[in-house]
Image 1 (cartoon, rainbow, N blue to C red):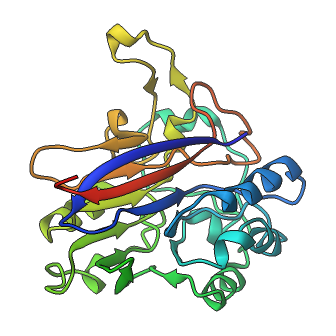
Image 2 (cartoon, rainbow, N blue to C red):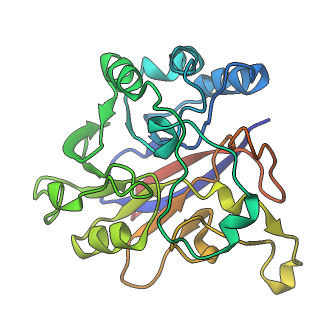
Length: 274
């Protein structure tokens, strides 16, 4: 079952609110009938724009399943970036390895049909934000979107989308899969207002600490993002808002979550005067 989280941010100067549906880390495989049914139900939500921050796939036969499960959302505006599991199938590895420093070594499976996935999403009108920057109109708001390819595989090249916010834009939104600090800091330096990312699975396994101790705590983010920012909406003074989706799926080789449920998020942008 997919838990729906809803947050509100006063980032618009005026006008109608804008609702983003943020999805991430679907990790779809052909045998996951329940997950596919749950994803189809997301199209019942009234949203203005969908952003998917990567890792759609977990199997070479999954691209058609993605198109079917998201078919209701694909009739409406959206954008996407890719994660490592859109390019390569997952491989079995020791789950404890996530708790140790990342030395940049990746165990990659067979190449997945990412081109088919990209072309299918684009044919439905969704915007490919991998190394791309665009200006879109959403309910009368000029919103800049800039995205990077997957930083976990070092496919990101922020220089291709770098620069100050478009002068015509009311706000600027950054989109990336893995929230490595090099991407976050580069977007922050350019004045991006809000960043969407995934990859962390919310830690996937969280320590069940009581609320007086800050609540449950992630053991890892699988990147260099601090663990306190492993899911949800966070901000530091003078920096962009960061919204991390804990995601919907997991690797088929680690099909469990502890203390962090599969989730989708509604991010409601409202006027600063509302």
